[in-house]
Length: 424
Image (cartoon, rainbow, N blue to C red; front, side):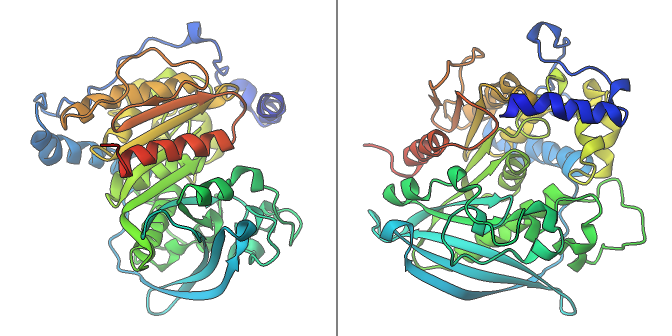
């Protein structure tokens, strides 16, 4: 499906002026030569030799680059969050799960914004407290399952075109392997990302960002202003806040997972919030796990033009100037150390640059070495369905297209099991 749609996508872009842009690279021999910034070299040239130097000096430098020049700065405002259980169903997923639906109401004292969180909780738990995998969804909680009791997202009336026919259920259910997660003792939390920030360049006005003091609908954004990815990451941390209040949740076993643009979000949320002990990037591509300097598949020029609202305005100046970036995406993955990170690709998803995603995991591994952990130790990509399960860094490439499959869920939980329940 993915590679069939790509020619149609590029045809449409050509009509709007894409023909004047650089051709998209899908041939490895056409990847330009490049030199990656050394993740262990500080801005003053000092070499990082131990984890203390990384944590006290180099990591803050890397974080500052991503805040100021890519994702924007997360505001410090304290937004009140009230969570209300709306519905509970104790015999969901063939009797294996309890589903809870929670209204999250965000407030700055004068204005509120609502989002709908769904929890799928295993009824039979191998451990008293369970790990939770949080992952945003694209089309509403009701779209992840055929269950008729699941409520529509609050954002439906804002951008109804994103959801198809109202009330249509289960269109994305194949991506959500709730049954396998229940069988393996993992709870799953999900929320439609549009409930936090509707995914449109004109929808800042309907996002939770309007609650923050820096919001001004009539002013030009500052170069380092956060936009949708930063806002989605902030929302993920508010979900983590709530999860940590629940008695059945193992607070030390929270997982942040994301697919495509939400894979980018997962990495940025994981870089900022250390409560996510495993961070998973599924087909996150350009602006996510893929090395930007490779300019393979989607490029910075394309992504910042088509989706200008994902990144801070400052990031646009690197379009067609990847070699001028003071950072690259392996350093985003390195920010998660020493917590665990897993990167995954799909064989037919060249748009996301599978090799570039793999190489980011490989080039982030030296930071994990500072902590005594092995990661991706070779720059040679593994074969299909031959996952690398490093101590703290994992990677796989599977058959198929830009998607989330049962195979992906299985490997992610395999990796999480290694982190949370190591064999003695």
